[in-house]
Length: 402
Image 1 (cartoon, rainbow, N blue to C red):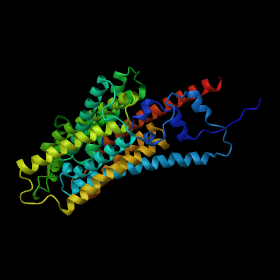
Image 2 (cartoon, helix red, strand yellow):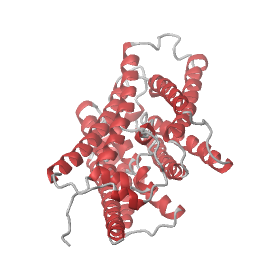
Image 3 (tube, rainbow, N blue to C red):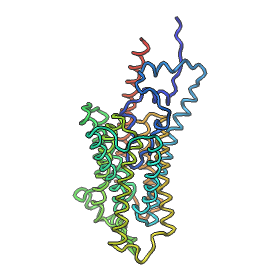
Image 4 (cartoon, one colour):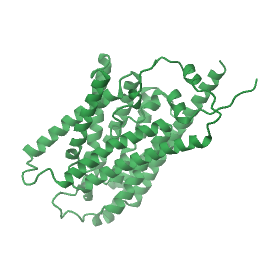
């Protein structure tokens, strides 16, 4: 009997065969989508077997390879746009000299309202699962909120390229945590990625016991902008260690958050509920921070908070929601492992913005360190992509024999 050959479109293949591991690769609380696109679909039988899913794909003789390439390139383009928007919005808020946490107030107010209305519309419960799952949701919310606050707090003390590089070590920490918690074997690619990451972070951090002579000659030219009313912590090397520690704390918090996110998604907790809990806690802490600044520190006694800079910064923070939407769409069109690699372009965008529009320039050690961290992300992403392809190939072959 003559065999029929046909092509399964990439985004359909991912939707059908995608594992829970892949679904949560966008669990980063900084760019996490508010609502999973799957929640917007009409409910179907979730117990549908893999055989039934594959049988849906009937022979498509008219499907061209070019259409697949276009869709995959579109996914990568969405991921690049999402990364660019997120990096630009954070850089703009910093240049406007507006408190990050005040700028985020508007975003999380609207975000919380949207999620509240959506959950009511879907008739979901605000508290899901057993006592153990509720505890996991609480821990995940606290850890995710901590990651967000540590990210923006560390940006006060170190330049954007340094912060972004440290933040993206989360990919490696997540891989390590996943191997420990889910008893997965460590691969050669992951081992190399760990070495590259540690080396890259060392070059970015530039500890004094290794870079004493170099730092003493370069940092003298950096203290140029202390004549402004606000203290420019970024130009003062005495705050650098604090900023780097906060950035690494952010990376670890995000890693824990993503691992917990995996457990919750596997346990059928809706994405909208997870994000609502995260948004609520973040908004409450932002309100407390604003009350502290206004009534304890008297920050707004001599000047109003509602300046044109504030409204522009608030608008920039809202663009981060659009960034997460683009990232989610990208994952629907391309393999999540590839999207994780593409998202590391944040580091490149941060270096370009910092060196074009800021007085504090990146030295060669920072550039090399950023390159090593990006390489480690590439190794982990490609390794994951290759494993997923092999897994699908074995699954597909076993099902076609039936």
